[in-house]
Length: 205
Image 1: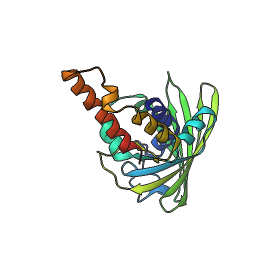
Image 2: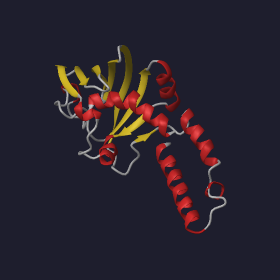
Image 3: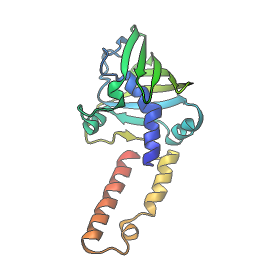
Image 4: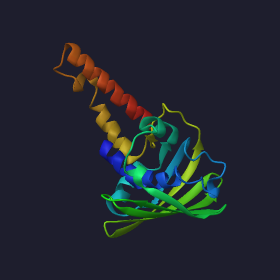
């Protein structure tokens, strides 16, 4: 599941990162919305290839920007820190943001954010990387405040991915997973399994 969540980051988290870019002003179209914190519901509308299959298996996801910032911190360097955003169009109904990332993962993104309703936005992103161009579309809805203790990413309990995870959890009870262990080793195993189940319950709601 962890690998699929990372893939989802590339699909929808990348779209969100453009919308929540730190080195440009908050676009006028998002005026009044705390874009860098709070809870955002993300729904994939158009994602090509295998990425689309992953997005559909997760269903609409919710990203807690407050928790994401708490997990990542403000001093962690990475590829995103070297990318440069430019706000090339900025009106009350539409924003266009261009993002350029340097080698070794050189890429360019052009994202168009349009208002689709109160606190609802549609983001269309054209990504060019390695000579290939892909178009992705997502709908973002501001869902209100969240806390640093919430799950960074959560999804519907009835989504295919959560149902698959639930089936795995049912077979991974502490007694089963920690069978054959004893003493401190068993205690550590039970604690780890308890944490895994708590994370699952927090992520699949």
